[in-house]
Length: 145
Ligand code: DQA
Image (cartoon, rainbow, N blue to C red; front, top):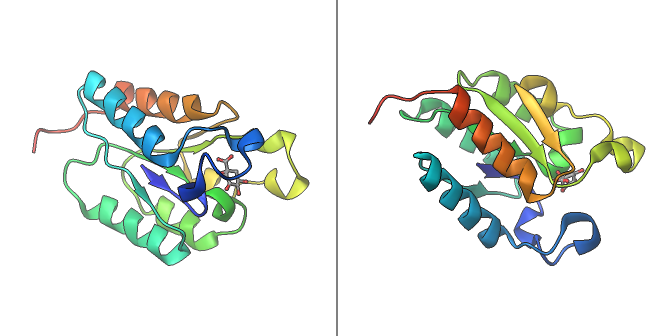
């Protein structure tokens, strides 16, 4: 799980849009769901575009990574470089958003990064993430390390 910029402020930032759940709470819920589904979830957050790409490269090189969930946040709408890094991954990627991008400003209606993902789940708050994890677990397999 890779969270993009400003998502470290989840729970404090625009709660009417993004809800009251904090990032540590969301990550704990993802880890718990992963445990119940028999997979290990590792969650990272960065505010940097380059750092986000480095995390994707790390996931690409790592053994035992069955899939990746990304919320590129503001970079969703701008980043050719993150899109290219997503394309370089051999494992399935699901993009998630807390908010419904289509119900917001015009500049959020396009997802550059979503083009490089298997699917995009948005507008369901934390459920966007949980559904993405359930999909990846149901549709992928990984050899024990
Ligand atoms: C977001 C939507 C983006 O447009 C915004 O820049 C974010 C969060 C979401 O999860 O709803 O930071 O990715």
